[in-house]
Image (cartoon, rainbow, N blue to C red):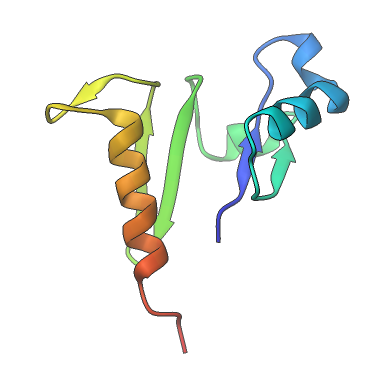
Length: 93
C-alpha cells in the first residue's frame, strides 16, 4: 500500500485546495495524508524536506532529499525501484 504524507514547509502549504491541486497535477493515485500539525513528522523524528520512508516486513528504508545521487543513480529512481520491489512481495497471510 502506498500512502503519501504531506507535511507543509510553509504556512500556505497547509491549504487543502493547494495540496489537492498538486495531487491532481502530478496524477498521484494513492491517498495523501495532510500532516499540518506535524504529528507524523515528529513521531518519525524527521528534520528534512523531502524525506522518503518505505516500510517493509523488516522495517524502514529511509532516504532524505530529492534528486541526489546515491550509488551512481538518482535517488528518486532508487526509491521507485524500491517501491516496485516492495509491491512485488507476496501478501502476508
